[in-house]
Length: 234
Image (cartoon, rainbow, N blue to C red):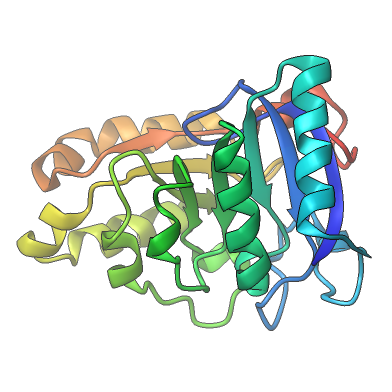
């Protein structure tokens, strides 16, 4: 499988924010164009990275646990579900070694439900208009299959993105809302939208979201508050 990098840091976003984590970054993205705010363009080209075996990657991850006591593993990309067969083998083998696995996916690939027993958290992107993705559409069946421990990740570039997300949630029927169990994290494009604007938006729409029964949270990229923007391996 094509791997871009493996490193230990802290998880910067989602349910495990702040948790020491080993990151396994798959090489290659399946979107026709990169998101405007993509901060891992070096993992976009499917031909990049290095070819590595599942066993080799598992051994490195287990080694980090032995050296640093890190038990949480984040599979990310690129888009890890592009290499589905290798991905399935990897999460299965990490699970047999009692490692906690979470997976970051861009929302375009179908989540393999047969991997739910190996994955504690799916972090599934919902692309907003500010991402630059052509004609963003929401494939709600994909998100409605997510569990309560999973997360829908929304990165907002401006207040227009926030308004768009609100309209998308408002458009859902009651039966669909009852199936929407995952928590929704909204965090800003770094340097483009102030966190306080998202907080104000969330507080201003709290009653609406409560009436809809959706769980919306403010998120951030914690690692960018700690290390210089653009620094790799963090």
